[in-house]
Image 1 (spheres, rainbow, N blue to C red):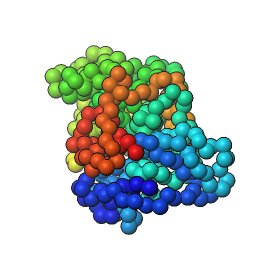
Image 2 (cartoon, rainbow, N blue to C red):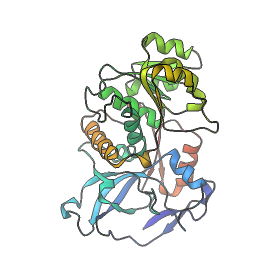
Image 3 (spheres, rainbow, N blue to C red):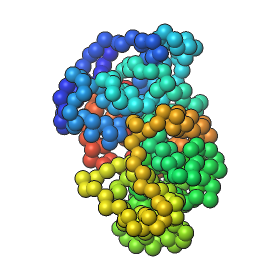
Image 4 (cartoon, helix red, strand yellow):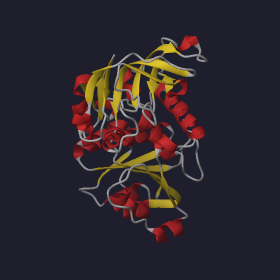
Length: 333
């Protein structure tokens, strides 16, 4: 089978296409014939870090069809369309290959009508967004229609993949959604995702604009740039609110502690890989329900343009994500 590997960390040119034996699933595992592999910032960051294995197949997310099952797995799962999460987390085999073997719980049935492109776009972005929306002290711990009714959510960077998923999941759950963007083009994408209010922080006074639509403050901030936005978050946060930080920058954020104390507010770190098991299971189930309901979509009409690359051009796909391509980068297997 064709597979992409890297045997040393570095630039995208360390990625190479090789031929490998088709792997067999072990106990509790399934083998998925991968159709589409999703590329996320975590994938290129992992490629640049110190190696954990002699060879690594990149990419955490993907979608395809189960074509074999190991002992202990229901044989009826063979032929099932699935989406994959965290394929390469503490494992040498990611989704940038024709077949991947992984624990069966990480191959989740893809609802009818959902494309492989959508399935490969879920994983890291959707599970991260779910966690960000469910870490407030007063809950909810699950996302369903109405779960966030009466809440205001601020999504920083609404045109990004996590931001897009956060907007769609928050809207589905009944929240009023405000998002910040840096250009008119990104504003249109955020609106397409369903955001109720869009603030261009380059042309508007962001805090004033956010407060104009949320006078009492925002209850949840889904934060991609905490170092840049810490002061803004403090200015617009409601009492007992939470800032869920899922990414980091080169600079450390300066948290406005005085404001945080007065508000009984929380600044919460979110790393999808180390989310508690029960919370991860809830996230997977809720994302499936949202997809089945048509509430989570991809493509320009959903605010997330798709960029397709063949497996032979995976280095270009990684470079596109590393260079902040707007939309979702997918590798067709």
